[in-house]
Image (cartoon, rainbow, N blue to C red):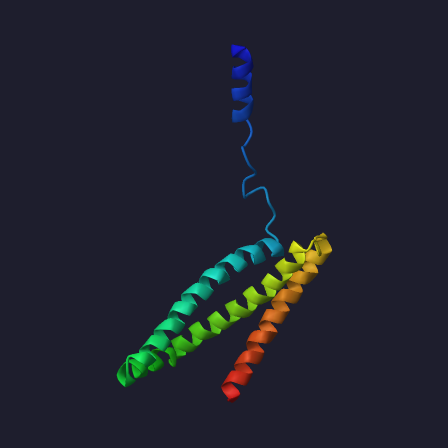
Amino acid sequence: MESCREARAMKSQSRPLSPHLQIYKFTLHMAMSISHRITGVALAVGTIVLMYWLASAAHGKEAYETAASVIGSWFGYLLIFGWSAALFYHLCNGIRHLFWDAGQGFEIEQIKKSGIVVLGAAAALTVLAWILGLAI
């Protein structure tokens, strides 16, 4: 009995418990999965900035002017652009996940094609939203 335990202990020490990151080839759908999580966090942070802007409007003219100057600066525009890109990416990739939840699109080629569609749709929606937003 003791030798059996020792053999199992030695066998478990000679192999990894789970595959390491160096084993996997980094692919588009892996990057998109990571990006989906990151954009979720970015949307939460962007919502905090939006709440700051709304709260400043409630606190009076001076507070609103300060918030508007920060958000209206080039850096503020850059943050809003990033937030809108994260919003559209997260939306499009979320729709892709809904198809996966329904059991559709699990073939490798379908995963690659849907990933490219998500990236293209997110970019197009972001640019379209900014064109329309700046035109108003």
